[in-house]
Image (cartoon, rainbow, N blue to C red; front, side):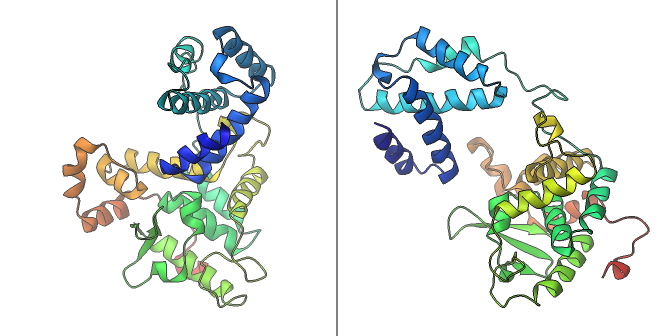
Length: 307
């Protein structure tokens, strides 16, 4: 049943990460209840109690039941069950788990001075760590997008970055300001010592860096200045995604048009908004981005000095 469910997820075009999450969560559920066809509300309550006993975060609990609901949607489609029991269960038992601004389930938002301190702390680990943090903070890229970048995706003449999408034929454009440009130039001079391959991010041995290295670099640097608590709440942890949260927030506070922010983030807009998206001019976005993007190098640092 799990194999058929996962094959259905692949046919629907779900991402590898989503499928792996569904697989893990559904296996945990079916280890306790091997026959989901006969599941009762009492058993769903018992399973929720088992998860709560593990002291999981609310967002993790919701993730488990989202996976189980996806399983039942599949079983209902295949006419193995008559209905999906999870939506009504979630409404009763999980709907009060709201993500409150400033609460324990709110992703950490650091200040601009704190981001400058984070970059300064990254210098102790070398230019690669500084460049990684700067890239996330200035572009709001997802970790997977950053990892797939190649040398040819950076255009220093036009000051743009070609960000690869999920499909091999899709990409979006990110922009470099002077600070990101100068840091990437210095990183590329360091990189040249180790490799001649075309991956942008390389290890000390010249190969393509492992994707987990991004998170490690950001978390370790943040922990060194008290911005990351590995065992703490979500609001006490600092991850690569916090940089995306950081950029979005400060672009918005600086007055950037929300549609331009969505363009920069690579978000998929609602279908009814496609006409607005269609009329966005990239050069208008670039100009507004350069006006609003936070300055992150220390004020006493001139770009030439940094180089």
